[in-house]
Image (cartoon, rainbow, N blue to C red; front, side, top):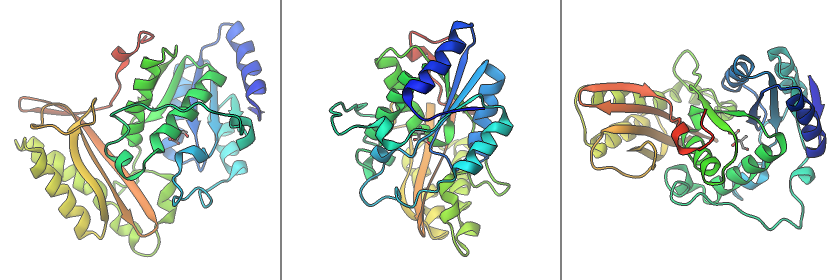
Length: 300
Ligand code: PAF
């Protein structure tokens, strides 16, 4: 595995591979790699010829009172994991390689960025799309891989890619879970004491919502109250627990079509998020990934 520390180095290495006809797969990360990230690298390995992963803890997506300073960083560990998975290139820039004091450009994906996590993390998704746009321009992959775990991010990135005509296909990997259902997250390591044993209530709440929908419930408010109740009982300080439209991420009157069950809450130091996306058609309810290749003219 090669390592590039500047955009120019990364671009040169990728350009050479593209010239020899290789397809480029890209997995952007902020490091602290867990099984969720690893599954995306495996997906990239299986679907593309040359796999690039990036590690960059992007300051622009953290709010002033968020965990930027304490965000876990372990380059040696992460780079060993990527090497073992068969990643070909690790792009790991310093902050000054990504942003300069002269930068003036900002990006906002309107409407989609203000709901769910965007309501309590103002500016977060602007920071995400800015860095993702820059990384896609630097790496110029054919396919970029994101996790369904960050469903809102995945939808917003797909909208940005379609709106700005990035010639890349976005693929999603399913959420990877611990045995007890807790979604893998770099922030799970903040769970102390008995918080770890209470945290799976987040997924239990989503599963209960799915069960209610399978049983015929079609009122978003009923499903939302059910999820909140389960989270609160486990000691979560609930940020949101909603059933929203899976593409527009806004409120709906009735649960049908593509629906995102999404919840977030604080357990001690950790702010945890999780979701299940469903396609609901009559009595048929099945889980899905929020992939919208039809949004982009570059869909393969
Ligand atoms: O999902 C993440 O880890 C980050 O938001 C991303 C996509 C790498 C952008 O910093």
